[in-house]
Image (cartoon, rainbow, N blue to C red):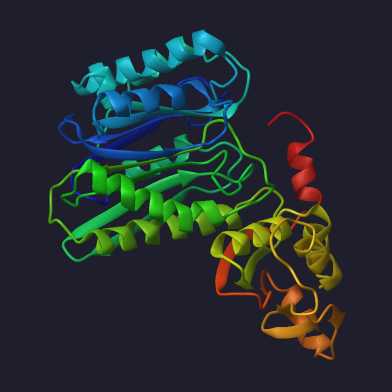
Length: 386
């Protein structure tokens, strides 16, 4: 089990007609339909989808409480204007009526094609057929119903001292720091206030989902929602954050492995920067450079491209101090290639996971980004509207 692994939660998923055949409607809710502490992190895209706008409003109106979230896939309800807002509100209203809570206590998410009118009648009909329950079947149904171009479901769980955490997510393309076309729904049975919940979620997201980039594209709908039933103990804030961080890290890596067209996962680590923010800035620039991503696809440790990108941004960079390693093998220092075991590097590059370390030797700042290579599979997936 995953999203209902924590005590006090139910889930369901089914096909309602947004997609032709596959499951496309899910609900995650409290067992009794009553609101509990909730927190969310949303896309920073100013072209935010209607459900993002409505969920933000609902969390504010409810003072950080929610009884559940209704989710459709196959249609993002983005770029749909005021009718899209009405449809998002209609979804939350219908789900709230089914649970017995107020519309403001129901959050709403959508994912899929942008600029298409939501088939709201099909969704409202589907809401009436959703029967939230617990167990593996409910988890699997909900996890499948939120997928778009994903090839596998993404689920995670964590057992802490006196509390548990469960989660499901979707995402395989348009992923970048500050999130993108991904959705994640996390539940815990910890006894915690909305204020603490918000702090631990933001900290966990910043170190996990916000360190993942596939293609550098920020979407309109990305949302991470965390709800706490309070059925068990009140852990320390640090322990709770560790649990939330663990499931977020697990889900982020699952998304990387399912990224569109991926053949390799690449971890870009930058140390010795003037600050942590500059370290992450350099790592992100390297991870999103198309030339570099293509060389990773070809298993080519083209060190010059990496140093070139590191020096192209606003972060402090001194080529005479920088040192670059692949798989723990240093291949460049002071702006030039150095003697190294090229066969060992080639073996590392041929694997499914690549580790890169760029030491700028300028300070104590450190940062990392998890990314993937760029190859024909990605182009094939995104050559048409998807």
